[in-house]
Amino acid sequence: MTEKKKFHSVRGVRDILPPDSSLWNWFEQAARDTLETYNFREIRLPIFEDTELFARSVGAETDIVSKEMYTFQDQPADLESANEMGRGKAVSLRPEATASVVRAYIEHGMQTLPGLVKLYYLGPMFRRERPQKGRYRQFYQIGAEVLGQSDHPAIDAEMIEMLIVLLGRCKIESWTLLVNSIGDANCRPAYVALLREELRKVKNQLGADSQRRIDTNPLRVLDSKLAEEQAIVASLPKIADHLCDDCRNHFAELRRQLDLRSIPYTVDPRLVRGLDYYTRTTFEITSPHLGAQNALAGGGRYDGLSEMLGGPPAKCIGFALGEDRFIEVIQAAGSLDRATAGRPLDAFIVWLGAAAYPAAVRLARRLRQEGFRVEIPAEESKLKKALSLAERLGARFAIIVGDQEVAAGAYAVKRLADGEQRKLAESDVAGFLRG
Image (cartoon, rainbow, N blue to C red; front, side, top):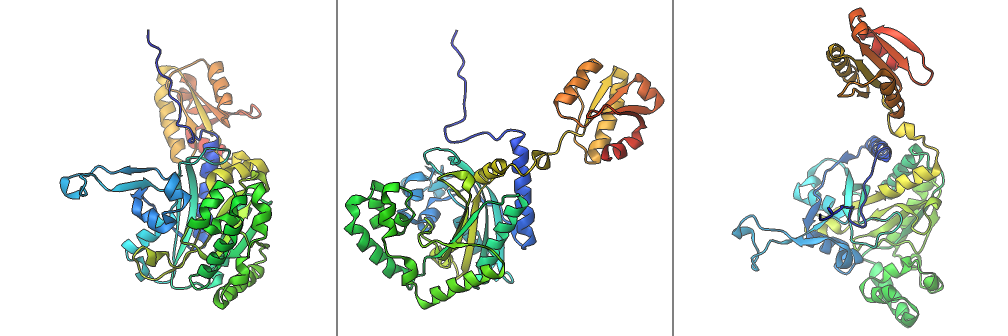
């Protein structure tokens, strides 16, 4: 007899099981609550987009586009939508969401809305990376974007402040904020040319990735984590010494705004973002609980992306945080009780005898309408066995509904933590559970 194949999840993805899923839900709600107090509103984005959107915004030569995207030919619904080769256009699972937000901003004419457009999103992203601790091929992000006509550094500082508030809500006390400016179209090209020239002098001392980036994206060399490259990177020209007056003043005002909010930070001249659309402000929050891959959240300003994608001029800034890593740090910190993240089972209804079952079903529905989490077994079992199962499920109370209870119009409600038991009318049960 042929052995049946046993299926497993694809390498690099994972299942998030209870009770961890309750903690994830708690964290996502905490993020929503925090973002919405700063007047951000949720946008729900497609899982896949036109590949060209990412190639144009993220950069065709970046690792994300050239190596890591999940790209496939869409099957055309009809011949008219097929390209000249008779196939559909290339689409990709989203590796990040900023490009999609800006696409939506342009497509729906959101620049006509009053004030700043403040949006947040959450959901899975996809990159074909080598799986490792804290890094998955399907990973989850929460992000926020501000789009409009102002590039005042106070907007940047308030976005960072919002992240710090979320850290506090999650009781994460050990973190470091790194900030930098990577200039703009006026001053960065000259710096990049200088950096490329200096890197070529030491090319033979660099690893393969850094050698390739000399031509494609030399700023990324500054972000190298290879131990053997650290001394070289430390000796390279610093972008802070090559900023134009506007960028220098913008960065100085950002620091003043952070001081105003009593937010501690470290200026890191090596802090760059890996995507082509970033300009001026860059920031990152790191955690000592994460080891070498220690970034919890990161972001920055991208004032030219809307125009790059064929839209109107817009001043923009955003961030994204990795949910996988945030959850890891929350668990490592150990200061957030998991009971806070996931509600326990409020009541397990034990019904004894077929005649008692309709009353038990009615009680379960009534309690659920009151917002309680209730479990009622589909099949009858002995009282001792049912109470044992209620305890193993972590129920706060067991409610016994038998023939005698139905006849008397009162149910036995037992608090499982201490064994206290009371006889209560159906109308009084909810109030007792609420305590």
